[in-house]
Length: 439
Ligand SMILES: Nc1nc2c(ncn2[C@@H]2O[C@H](COP(=O)(O)OP(=O)(O)OP(=O)(O)O)[C@@H](O)[C@H]2O)c(=O)[nH]1
Ligand SMILES: [Mg+2]
Image (cartoon, rainbow, N blue to C red):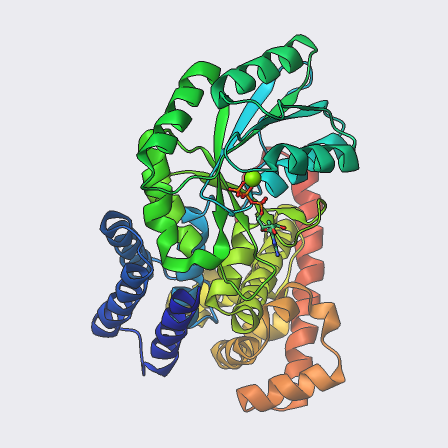
């Protein structure tokens, strides 16, 4: 839907242009998010909940080092939208082999119910489930033939009565038959209805009462935009909507209305339709979907940056757990040392200068301060895995810290020595297990 995408472009522009993200700009940005979601017909309750969460997280979360408040805000916005749409995981219907699951499809005329029934049947058939279709649309001329043709195409049995009048009775008979025959999934295609058509809505209600399906799925046309919310709500009022399939996402529709539909029903989007053919159905991916609404390109770069950080963080924790002594550890020790007071005094307390090589203890404070500055110019990867620091990296680090390559080399040599001492100490520690040891 255009509105939502355009709204978020405005939100992102605001975020990018703000000189800094303080409380006031944050409020302004959140107001723009609220306006955008209101226009997209998302319920006020959800909007308030979302804005509160975003505000709280932005104010409370420090985020990883090297990331601006701006980047953290965009990431939080992304994560919160993904959360509304069901979280990171893709969702599949809770099917079990040997146990019948009855799924009833509902939706307005032309939303794609019949096509989707066949698509879902095909999807689960390929996964090895025993699937059957039931045609319970007695209103649309040719509905029976349409589903029959599709069922033959995918090789899935179908129950229907070409000239039947009572959709509920037909559905009952179909479900009974396939249940008896031990089908894992029975999909009922129903007549399209308008949300104001009382008679049809009542029929749908009665059918749900008579059949008691395990799940009711709303088939929603992604191109209807803003109407998605009220439409979903109207169906939800008559019968609890548990699932949604969003169709026609192969066109220009962004499907932003889905956000409102999900918000109104609490339903889970399971699939998206991306074409007219039976195999043009995909499991819904909330992350990809939100990225599309927010603008894929920018977000991708940012999320990759966060992922890179998470990877490095993982590597760091692993290095720590395996007892590998990295530059990062050295940095941490230096930092602790310098915060404890004059170095000479402290070194007197540590027998043999502890893990510090002789020359460090001698040169003392000055070199430690310089080395800390040098290490500030290193990337996390370099700190965790100093072996990757080649000449060109040394040049960059020297430039960044206002030192020389010689200085950087000196630090690396000191680190190498510390590492060796550390290794020895660790070995001793292993030998003298039980003797408390602290650096
Ligand atoms: N491009 C595209 N077209 C779709 C998709 N899903 C359904 N359609 C088309 O939408 C039209 C309506 O689809 P149907 O499956 O007949 O819709 P319906 O909800 O069963 O319609 P009624 O039974 O009349 O209420 C058909 O032309 C389908 O081919 C989709 O994901 N992408
Ligand atoms: Mg149909």
